[in-house]
Length: 190
Image 1 (cartoon, rainbow, N blue to C red):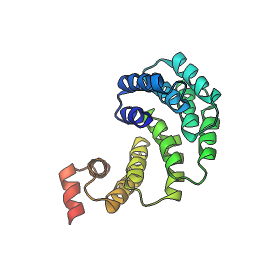
Image 2 (tube, rainbow, N blue to C red):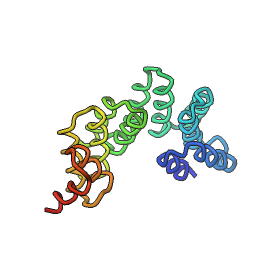
Image 3 (cartoon, rainbow, N blue to C red):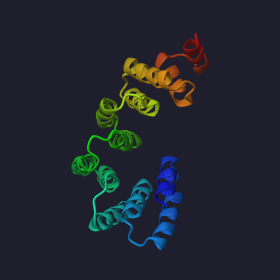
Image 4 (cartoon, rainbow, N blue to C red):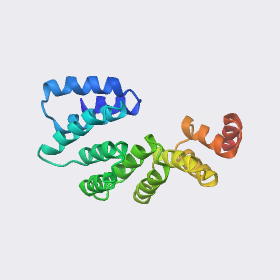
């Protein structure tokens, strides 16, 4: 259930994600991960009060997964509460040394067009794992948002070095080089 809700959130289908979270919560009442995911869906739909209540309920349950803290951080970020950094720190502490958690936090910031903090977390992820094309692609998007074209170009190129044919990286590289996607692809092939 959680994977389905998270997938829908990645696809920017927040309304559908909230519906699936409700269905999951019918079976797994007060599941903290599903409550957190529903909170993320709610915040992305602009229902900030509901998102905060869901996040409170998730954190009241036993345990303290990285996802619950990351979801809380997103709720606080949208509410413009500077305590989001504390929550993201708790998420990192719940997954020490993991490369995926800083990537996920960076993507939260990227989703909300907060490119500078996104880049900070993405760089942490890259220090821990350099072999993820998706990570380099995501970093390229963040650098692009900051207007750091030369670094964005390098990040998109790194993604393509790791995994040829990634459409997002090809398009990003084309934008960063100021040429069309076909020319960027031809340059890569050469």
